[in-house]
Image (cartoon, rainbow, N blue to C red; front, side, top):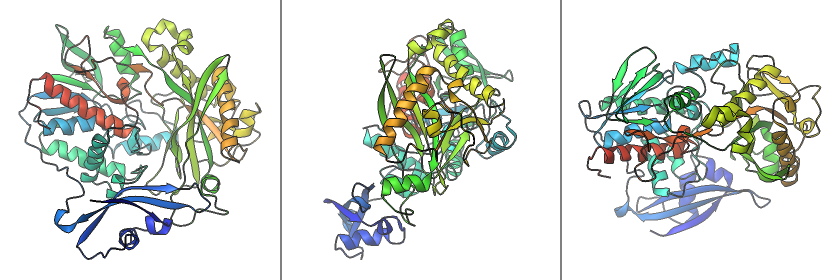
Amino acid sequence: MPVKEIVLSPEEAFDEHRFTQSLYEKLKLKNDGDVWVRPIKRSIDARGKKVVVRVLCETIAASEKRPLITYTKNFVDVKNARRVLIVGSGPAGLFAALRLLELGLKPIILERGLDVQTRRRDIAAINKQHIVNPDSNYCFGEGGAGTYSDGKLYTRSKKRGDVNRILEILVAHGAKEEILFDAHPHIGTNKLPKLIEEMRKSILAAGGEIHFNTRVSDFIIKNDKLTGLKSTDGSVVEGDALILATGHSARDIFELLYKRGILIEQKPFALGLRVEHSQQFIDRIQYHCPVDRGPYLPASSYSLVHQAQVNGNQRGVFSFCMCPGGFIVPAATAPGEVVVNGMSPSRRDSRFSNSGIVVSVNEEDFLPFARFGPLAGMHFQAAIEQQACAVAGNTQTAPAQRLVDFVDRKISSALLDTSYQPGLASVDLTEVLPDFISEALRQGFRNFGSKMRGYLTNEAQVVGVESRTSSPVRIPRDVETLEHPQVKGLFPCGEGAGYAGGIVSAAMDGERCAEAVVRKLTLKLNT
């Protein structure tokens, strides 16, 4: 199975009617069934004046041809099997449930929010009426935060086999096969809901349970072992173990853990603003095109990093969750706060480009909130979000400033058009952000302007605040067993517990926790 790299034009690579035939032609092979050409990786190379697409592919004899994916939805009936509770139906929770099904245990998912379709109503209310439902929003509900805030599948994980398995499961539930070989795979906010529905159907068909609109109010712990959960409606559900996969914004769960004396730790994270340019402008920089990128190249992205010096300390400033052809969305989880995030539809065809530009923050920065113990970082985060809401008018209108104006410490006399539906208010963002974050961002934007000519412009604007980059709390767990060191049967999982960042890494951690539960329950693990 020789592996070769071929170079295609954007039209050959991204016209779905030409892509496969182009592979055969470049390899000088006939597409007659004798040889199968399988793409392994497709990536854009914009380093030269002419943008090309590099495709790594392997050729396989027809007699050795195998299915593109090896994963199959082959579950036994677990209706009467041992019960494992899962709090949260984001990627960590859903993939934990699917893995439990494969291993013969019954997953019972408790989700505070609503199903993926009904959830749309509450998301519309945030955008149009500025009403935030604390249980159903861009962060909470079936599918988790990633469902309605982009759907990127890129991960820095080096465990390629595990990554491929996650991607195959997504394809088996309706994702396009191209995510298996694109260098930066992406499903899109408009496509993810249907895929999430299919995953739900798999879980229910095999005897698993999913309970929406069910918020956990307490843990049932007997002799230092977790045996069940109480919900806000007074009901009790029991299980042999709990996978806690709440996501990074479940502040009430963090508060409950602290109140119950269950060990948690504060954790560094990053906080800043979201910058919005015209997508055509970013394309001109990245693709060296005089007008636009043309009909075949996808909307271009970027990744930037700088080490700022502030008050004698080094601060990382970096782009986060860059959304080409996307929208800025309101990601608050409670009234009285403004939080922004980014998303892109599958076609990435918005006229806007946006990215979080954030600054690393750590435990020393949380000292003014030290009275909150391990929740100090969470309260630091919340205070900035509440200030953003207050200075912008106490709605979901977001505080904003033109980019050069922010760097030069000027209030913008007028703002630009925006993809952020609730609207923007021109304010001095130094009234929102701590001084050290503002200064680090200024240094970062100046540096980015030197790396991407034209990036630092008043034809861009910054919107606040980008604060939910990762969990401000870590829930400790044993390195080997993945079980909480204090409460037996509790398996902290995913982004909310501090062990993942993004859809794929959260899904992988969900599978790991499911396997750890199986080992804990002394069942034989057949992988």
